[in-house]
Image (cartoon, rainbow, N blue to C red; front, top):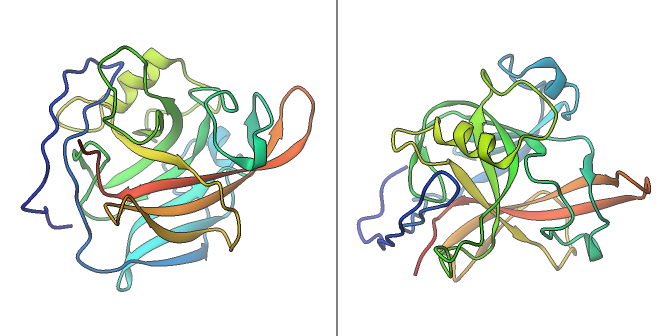
Amino acid sequence: MLRRPNSIAVCLGIALSGWLVPSVRLLADEPVLAIVAADPPEQVAEPIRKALKSEAVSLANGKSPFFQFWLRKELPLEEKPSGGVLALDTIQEGIVLGVLKVNSERYDFRDEEIPIGVYVLRFGIQPEDGNHLGVAPTRTFALLSSANDDTKLDPVAHTDLMKAAAAVNAAMHPSNLNLQPVEQVDGKFPRLDERNDGQHKVVLLQFPARVSKSGDVTTVNVALVYDGTGQL
């Protein structure tokens, strides 16, 4: 993926518990989405592998996929979301969302390079510490951690999650992809869309889900930003 020459710099001081969101990046070519029957990569530990679907959501430029997602078969929830809309109180932070295989040069929501490899995606929440007002559309993110090191299906505590995600890139900053709510559920899942006047390219995903306490079955719909970054 080519760097956009007129990127917008957004400077924000952050520790491991926070975020830095500096620019906007767009793809040169429109990607193609496909559902491919495939087992999760061999790097994925067995406890996580068992919780994933045996199919990949593939995003490709031409015939070459740059992202492949294996989603969780059933997402455990704290509370039942209203209308399936992603909300902070519905999913425990640190929960495994799925697995991502990166096959070519890509960048995260902070504009940091994501090295080619296999990553566990966990649900992360941007802290409310007064340093992050307006830097991202939402406080909800998918945090990336190396599948070689992240081997347990159990949720990971915030501090440990930030440390694992910070080990992904050279900047030692938590690698993340922004998650946005999907309030209009008409149409099939998954599918591609755009947000913020085309500055964010998203893949709309739907997770089968179950409320842990009540056993109620539902769905959670999310828009994952696969291209584009935060802005002023």
